[in-house]
Image (cartoon, rainbow, N blue to C red; front, top):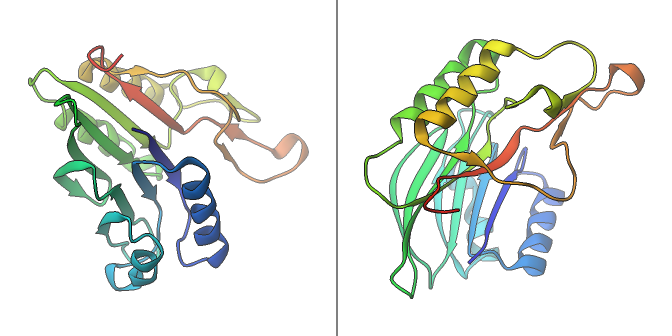
Length: 206
């Protein structure tokens, strides 16, 4: 069982689709969560043909902003519980009868809306005892060392993010490979890099 989570930044780009095909070929993920697809339901027919081994849930973008896509292999016993423009929540029952919960989240990118990400995260917490894996692009860092470059961090938003994680009993899972998952694309001293994408899990998962 493996999960691929990727901010695609537009599935209307042929290069992006080709890159996704390469990722699927190389890693054969059981579950794929894509963010910022920037397409609506009627525009993903080609993807359904390319990935026929997967079931698919499409959350259409609003214009050319946002959009989510969840794919899972047809032999994966996955049930979607809820979804919105910023999340997809599901439950998986494995062949061993083990049951776990997964939640893909795309955090609000605009500063004035970021509090909505933490409200959403808190609302998804349940009292049910089960393994929970939460992943996505949260559009915020958890700690000051997760950013390099000019200008300081928004301490208030970092604290709110950490408070939401503590409320949901979720811990950051260690990552390997490329450290920073977002860059402003500028050169020299104007360059800023941050860790926005991550996997979180509760103690029952760990």
